[in-house]
Image (tube, one colour):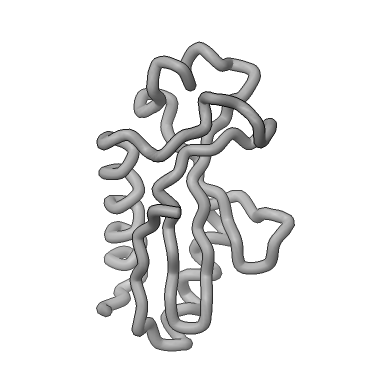
Length: 110
């Protein structure tokens, strides 16, 4: 899986990140995994056409001192469709910007 990894994060900062994601993201059935919705204006043509598969999200996984953001756009409504794919350049930019803005807003320096 292609992903963006930020590590060497202090435990107190991981608590801030967890709280932020609890407030702004969608909790998954897995502990320490969250979904962040991709804005509709960043969807590719196939994803726009697949209304029944929307919304699309990327995964955020938290570990002990690290956070991983997946570069994969997946449907919240199913697992087996061609509309799920590695993120487009505009989606990649959104994901990395999300990570950097989250850290900045929380006052976290890595």
